[in-house]
Length: 274
Ligand code: NAD
Image (spheres, protein in one colour):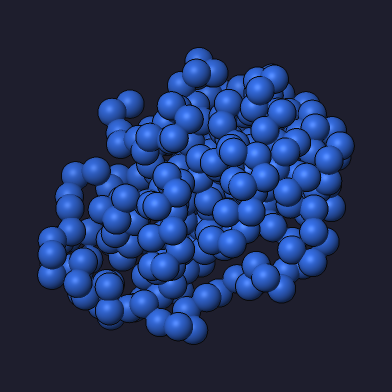
């Protein structure tokens, strides 16, 4: 499918829009993933902790696409961080997914109190060398965490997946990413649905004859972000991918810029979690 990709510093690339499957039950994951791939998605974002890697793997199988045509991300859970555990955790994920490699493997949270993210990053560097992960990255890292792992290994994560939506735009962190050559991926891109009734968003949606979800997803795309909206509803899965036929204008972008607030975070603070 003809759709935008974002280039990684390691030479690979990622489809800019993917399907998130957090809170998608394992027994629904296969049909959700198959529906998404049918609608044109070529990028699925799961994690060991989501408990649905097996369902995701079944959906990939059902869709019957060539392996090289689908981009699959999974993540290392906090209790498997360290020097030796990540390789074992990754093999367990691959087995559940029914794959021999993922396109992207992420450290899910820095979990700074446990103090094992540098060892974990060294382990991921090895997983990329041996081909079990084509690319490696992180999630929920701040600029200090990023500099720490880069200084320890010389290996720059291809992306950092962080909470990011119009009410929490992460401007400072995005500037650090740009400086370090790290792509930004937005989790909870729709603010877990809370943004879809915001009058600023619904007004822009009415202007373009689009839905609120499509406007927010388009804002991520036009901001150069990689975006992974979640839905289990087939009509919404399709709607969320039907975003390539319009663009936001400067007035729309300025209005959405004004939605950023200091208290806009919905999920946990990565310095305190877990
Ligand atoms: P989201 O912002 O994608 O919102 C999803 C919710 O929005 C849905 O449950 C539904 O209620 C609503 N919705 C979706 N499409 C809609 C539509 N077209 N019309 C109306 N309502 C709609 O929330 P999310 O699931 O938290 O985030 C997306 C993905 O990000 C997750 O599935 C997961 O893959 C990833 N994620 C990662 C982390 C992390 O720590 N790395 C944390 C949270 C989420």
